[in-house]
Length: 479
Image 1 (cartoon, rainbow, N blue to C red):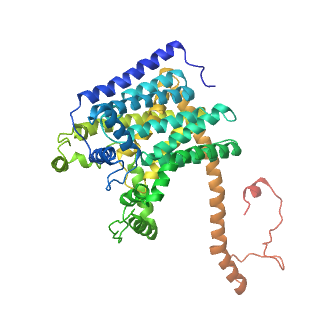
Image 2: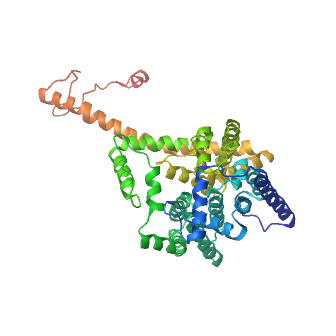
Image 3: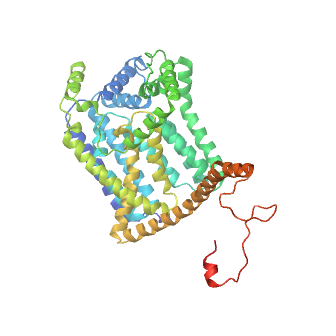
């Protein structure tokens, strides 16, 4: 059963950890060097400034619309300095920790929830993200706000319906923010259809979430239809899809339909290359070491600084030491999450949500080129599962629970192996009799050959066996 409402002592811990999360993020924002760290930040900044001046984005802007709108609102209220906007991001980062705590205590108990909140509060990447102009901070908050709402649903109640409506709003906002929002929508659709025990409840949930999402997405979709500019939905996939061997994609025009169709047709004509690329990228999605960082090249940073003096030339976030420390920390997090997942999937109903979300994120990004930043919205799932492992270790029951899960996996594998063996036996015996014994028997029948020279009864292929006293020696020698 889920724990009761938080006590006053638990709330004190929650507020203390929330203050810690906010203080760490604001501290990094206040003491970081001025300027932008990554190239994408320049695009969002130009779009926000153009919106304030003209009421619409720059003609070259082709990304999702919500993030520059939030940035423009910050510029309008607090001025064009980056510090107020980064503090706003710090608020959203701390709020993500609150969502992690809510979901963690509901699934794994009070102490595991607080441990997960502490992990989310101090995880270095999420602390640093508050000082970087990239939509993943707001996107991660929306993702885990939606997942926390879903983890608390109670089918057939008014509270359940309200949570579904709020979840639909969250999905729509995240879809206007970054690609992970669209993955979230697909994941929840699959979860509602196949993760519900009653199919009618799942269909009802799909209708409520879908309607709420369409209401929020409606104005943006209508604006794209009116202008005929679908670059946010078409051009970005076209740019990020790989080109199959022998395919020379054209330069994009309009919304980029020609580029997208050229790459998709090339991938369809090379299915084995496409499957190999997708599998390789899915494995790379979990690589602890953050590679493919263009800003790690000093020459690239210098060129960006020449184009815009606000770009930081000395970027410690992409240094070798920083990347190595992240690789070690993320590896430890993955190991602890694996221990927690092994136990949670057997003992905690609803914990499949935590394992399914990272897998869905990796699968949807795998046809493209995966990077470390794409898996950031999945980090809280690993933190939650790792917190469960730590909680069980503190209770001195982790090893016993893991052994129970491993035994359950072994029993499950034996049931699967039995089914596989039945199919294999059918296939092997079919091949043996159809390909091997069948033709040989037919030839023997046609040419009346009997290599064994066994006596047969008239009109039968059965061999005659001489009847004797069936002593123990003869029973042991059946043939």
